[in-house]
Length: 466
Image 1 (tube, rainbow, N blue to C red):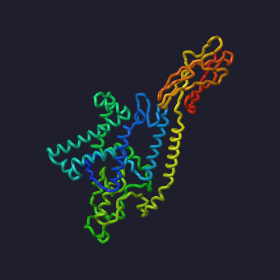
Image 2 (cartoon, one colour; image 1 turned 180 degrees about the vertical axis):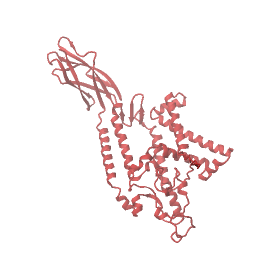
Image 3 (cartoon, rainbow, N blue to C red; image 1 turned 135 degrees about the horizontal axis):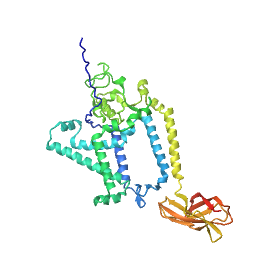
Image 4 (cartoon, rainbow, N blue to C red; image 1 turned 45 degrees about the vertical axis):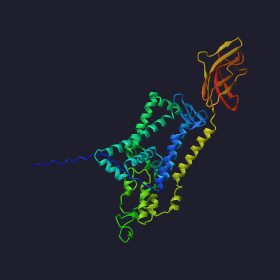
């Protein structure tokens, strides 16, 4: 008896991407997205040009290791504040996501914002969805060449301006302008302008939804922050099914149909190409384009709006109204996020308000541990690193205490320029018979002459030889 070889079927796990042609949409949420684009880009492009006294308001000076943010100057020693800011930002994202899903992705994420801007340019040159599909399918012609070329030319200009602005936060932007105009930018500035421009052009022009689907980790772990009372873009299955086409004016109940006319416009306007009628999917960025277009269709059919809307799983299943949805916002998870967020934000604000603009490090001169001078004194040498984080020049007085008769023989005053660190040598003398041999604790007090509250007290060891 011969054996028949079993057929082997090869199943590919690779899914080739298909180009998505999102249809433009108008409506209340579309207007909100436009407002968010304008606000975020005005902030990004404009803040780099905002002056503050005689400098840029926001400047991350990596060369000199100083971060200027309006009236504050932060140094590497201030890493704690950066940690607080990152933690507060993370908890803010958790808090907003637990309440309203991926609204940050849909309205404020840089990938979404620049994709929106690039799609506006694309529409100006190539038209809306159907026109773009026809143009891509058409053979090469002058019409196709100038439309595609014009689109990419504007894309490149936007991308280059974005890269230039990004670098302008790390190199003074007025200096950067002169360097660009004179073609004298340094290698690092040139690299980052072109790299950031290329990333903007590639991500917003070509990658688009693939960044959200495959590259962004937020889409993958968002479900951890969702629960059944999280506001998400939802399709009302009970009201919409069974879906089907019909003429305007027909009562769907008499035709044994739901409110959904199966026009597929919700799929056509989706920037990630999903069908919201299939329920919540990780690709959904919560942009609400499907809500706007569905409301438009409902208006044309004289049906109530809200077939696709922001709602929660519990609200859909239990037919809650807006008041009931609001009532369930104050649930334990939200209250916990809010409490932690308030504590962290309050701690950050308090730390910034109470931040001492003076920092002092005391380092012993290890070359001269202790020496006898004039036959009457024991002298120790110290180096004081005095950091003046204020942008105004300051004169500081240095005092010492901790041992009877301790005096500063040299270096009792320090002059420090604004936002600078001064290495200052101080000689401390103690009468020879005052202290026993060994190590003794002394304290240096550095105080600004013009502002007594600007003061720091640091301890050091004073050595008395045997």
